[in-house]
Length: 209
Ligand code: PRP
Ligand code: URA
Image (cartoon, rainbow, N blue to C red; front, side, top):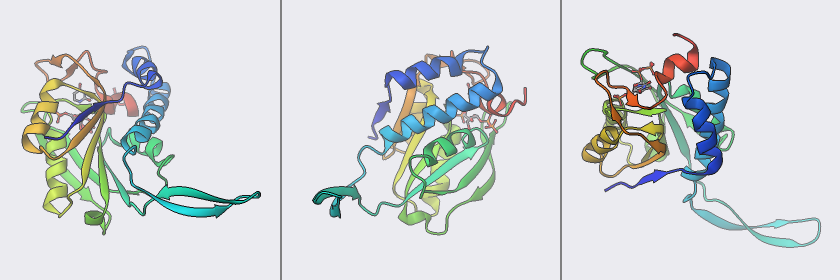
């Protein structure tokens, strides 16, 4: 079974509080999501393998370490996942970015796929699927499935806020996937919104409501 990691660093929790706050306006919301994405990237890359190299300092030769040729791919689920991409690229600038476009049908709550564009060498990369919200888990499951269908085998999922229902759904359908979240909230309401959550992540990021 994949593990669930709650990234409970005080800076992440502090910023998440202001992300949740309905008084936080679009620009600040966007900046805070960007900052939390950077902090979460630090946690999600914690187990990247290292290799030893030597560098010449101004004083002597140092036995030192670098990340061992690991190629990463970021896979934001459109739209809201876009809000976390730049924050992660600040720490992992060499990562390639693939996009999976899904929207949730408001009546059925089922995800509908409308766009997939991935790096050509996507199968060789360690992929991080990014979406601020893991609600029913339908969107994350469909995105992971789209990657697996194309031969991808190393996939992690990064979300800001998850509902217990969403975590369970991903664990059931994709038991090989580790999930990184900043918070696990209480439940989903009748409209499929996470309670207390933060509202509609895409609308708050892009000012469309
Ligand atoms: C939101 C969110 C997730 C999805 C989560 O996207 O960004 O992708 O809902 O819900 P689920 O776990 O129940 O599938 P939405 O469909 O509102 O599209 P948007 O990002 O374009 O606003
Ligand atoms: N999508 C969102 O943007 N927010 C939720 O609470 C659930 C799904």
